[in-house]
Amino acid sequence: MRAMPESVSVRCPACRREHIYTAPAYPCACGAPVAPSLDPNGTPTAVTHRAWDDEWIGVRCTACDREGEWPRPELGCACGAVLRVPLAQTAAGGAAPRKAPAARRAFQPITIRTARDAVTAAAVYLRWLGYRDIRRADQRPTSGVGIAAHGLLAHVDPTVRPASLRDVECLWLTAMTESADCVYFSLSGYAPDARARADTLGVPLFVLDLTGTPQPVNGLADELDATGAR
Image (cartoon, rainbow, N blue to C red; front, side, top):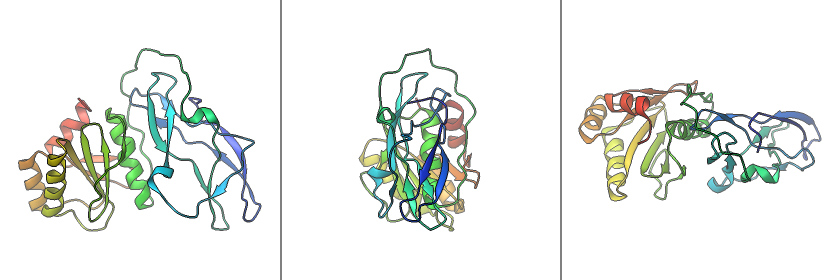
């Protein structure tokens, strides 16, 4: 794993167009940039179907030696194919020197263009807060996407309607059964009764703006944003 982004040449297997792909860097919980290591001699593969486990890879931070899950590098070709960029074997782990953790840096957002981007932005934000082992939640909500971390259950709602009181209560009840805290991310805000109920239940509420920056909606979210995971 290399700490800085790198670029490789990627040829589409469908139309043979050649692209230059630069690996994105994401902020580790310690603040250092983390980017996957790419295989310049590997062969890209076209994405034919989606599965959550295939969407994420393990990458180790060279600054603090944390290993986190990050979105798998992908490239969209003009012909319509979506390509998975080949990774070097060290992208999923490997030895790295331990250093003293740095102070938490400013959050680096991910622009939201699709529902998948919204989930990725929420996951990256939770990792920035210091949550570990981020993954898809075991119980899938009736709408949106559930993601989980150690001791936390989060709901990401990428729809165009404000989250309802029932949405907030369902998240809280599911988290209660798992003895976990919970947090809600919405692209379209919250109904007034949902906000009031969240304050009663202790659920931090965030709105994801299109830059990918979670904006706190209630005092609980303000506190979480300021203090991070505990």
